Image (cartoon, rainbow, N blue to C red; front, top):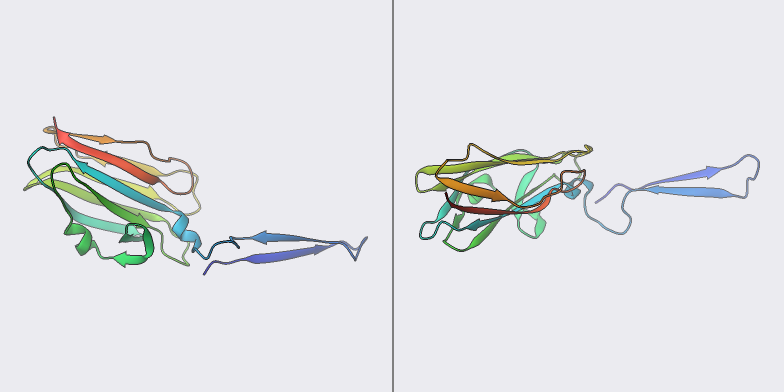
Length: 165
């Protein structure tokens, strides 16, 4: 449920005239914090090895099933994602419903027992800047981050290609 505030302004000079201001989204039942989201489309270009998602963590917000922000999934379920060679998997996170929070977190990508990199995102509620970055990239791999929205609102869909260097 979203919050909608109606303000009626009535002038003392013209009591019959009034102006209404509506704050909020009256056309959608989507919770406001759901506007802060990221959907990471991770493509495995390693050749013959699978990529495993591990150490999934959200310090703000939640992980959700791709395409349905109302279906929260645990970090454990995210950690069970294995991306076969030449396939793409999605990891998605958003703010919590009815809370003034966006989403912030990390996931690690692994090739067997070797960490490829850490992916970090911060999509804060009420801020004008988002952040998305790759960290601790192993020099044996190339991790290419596609375009994403650095401005307020959703980070959006982020294409991530992972291949050997």
